[in-house]
Length: 270
Image 1: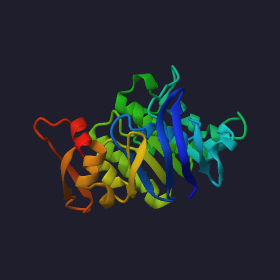
Image 2: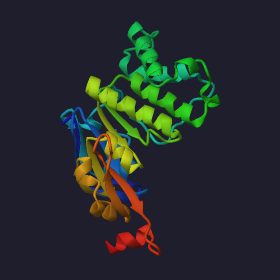
Image 3: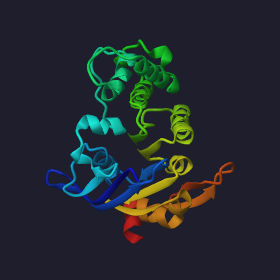
Image 4: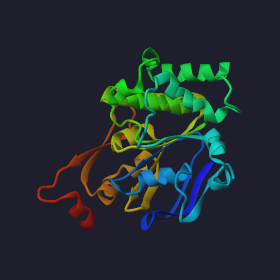
């Protein structure tokens, strides 16, 4: 295991978000964190990427505590697409994507051929080549999201963490992004960890699901082990029908409204 968390307590100042988290990210697989809003998914991803120092426990990357590495060393080993993205002003898409090559460069010298190749591949992979010279602040929300994903891909790491990578994307681009990530995993063996809100997308694209609620990991397992009526009730406080995808046989969750029962009430009664 290249990446794991052991007994993590995660806090923002005096507010504790998650406690006693222990998780392992299997190499060469796609792991998806699911759970209701505010359960600690994004905070966990921040800890795994070294953006947040745990109050307790440790994150281990390649056999060492992740905080023993410099920021640049971590960036050479893993790439992160955070939930909140701040784009520099007056920058083109190609210039933004080029930032992804900084951790791989030894100096501020001009881009090497391998840097340019990585940038052009990332633009092509995300369908952004024709928009390469467009200012980022003139893009739609979906186009901007794809530009940031291209930056992450240009970084060229074998370990990729993404916090809600399909945000702002319509369903067609959601599928394109997730299919791209699946192809990177299948053909290049990249280890991918992402937060998704869509349970069915998580079940379709994840090898391993981590289900969280109220700052704790409720269950870890394959989609068939996690997407069950019982766990959907426990994690999300909903009643559901669990069907099978007609092509892949992966589970599909169909929520069932219960008159007069809110998700919070259902969770309390579970």
